[in-house]
Length: 449
Ligand code: ATP
Ligand code: MG
Image 1 (cartoon, rainbow, N blue to C red):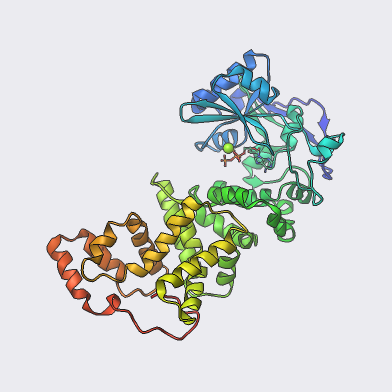
Image 2: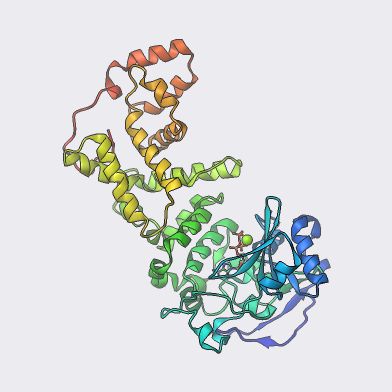
């Protein structure tokens, strides 16, 4: 491999490892312009012709090298956000913690970030003030050069740059070697890097699952101790991260890694606790929900955070629901009370915008209504906007081992049947699930009705 050394760089961390730049020429790597979004190429060429450096970086380069389709293309440049904006009329600047430019082409947005430097390099107070007492970076707007930009990125395989001046891959952190060995390695001292941004721990789990990479030993080691730092992260950011973790087609694998790393409990503490307590069905329900989600994502079918959260929080809601019933509250108000209690506790960890919590509550409430199928109610339930999700939820509960006495099959037959079949099904509904069963006294009971 042709190596061009442009001096040794020491990252601004405790690591004693020295890095050097390798440039892998076009004929020695597999990234070709044909695989890159034409809009991303436009941005690269425009910035270059205006005299700026500009490179594709991050997931775009990494995934192309792995033979995968990147989900988006990010660009890094030495132009400031304002200078980028001046080059494009379809551009707007966003973000406070991390200011960057969005260049819009129809539905595609190309994200253009200015090279950042490590915070240890920041001399003046303005920059120092951007770090909290625990070492967390609150704002990351200290600009730098490409080398500095590479070394403040998270994983070595995320710090590979591809330029359209020479079509080479610029590797400052031995990313190519880690890519070949399928290793996820943080750049610099792992504990320091996690303290700067605890979300990197979640990103380690996400990429390990997505790429099927091993988390390198030193990168994995501090996670067990530093996990609690995730409690300092705003719940809105964690919500965004949860969506990336569980709606990207590798949710089941991600969940297993998060559990192994003991990080799941900082996202969904009540669910984690119930799984650890061996609550019947909790683990199976969550796993099955994630398997189903992966199948839908990979088949390009729509998925909604409402359904995902409905499943992830169902075990806790069931438990609360039963407590309310035991206190003598009737089923529907009991479900409302239980839902609200679980949501209130959850949003302290990961936010859940109303547009998702509302349909989630409806899915849960319909779990009480679906067993009541006599008279005209079945037809009315089918027309409910949340029926489909609620029916899927019944199937999910059954798949996780709950005995709902044939409820899923009844609704499958009802939907598939003609008028005659439907009538018969409803007539057969004189006893059993349609009737309210006597309230049970036992606590920790799993069925809501
Ligand atoms: P994907 O888009 O497939 O999820 P990605 O690697 O492109 O993966 P992004 O979240 O899009 O991930 O971030 C783009 C790049 O920005 C990363 O590859 C990494 O270099 C850098 N980056 C993102 N988040 C962080 C972070 N918290 N700390 C350090 N670098 C980061
Ligand atoms: Mg990306």
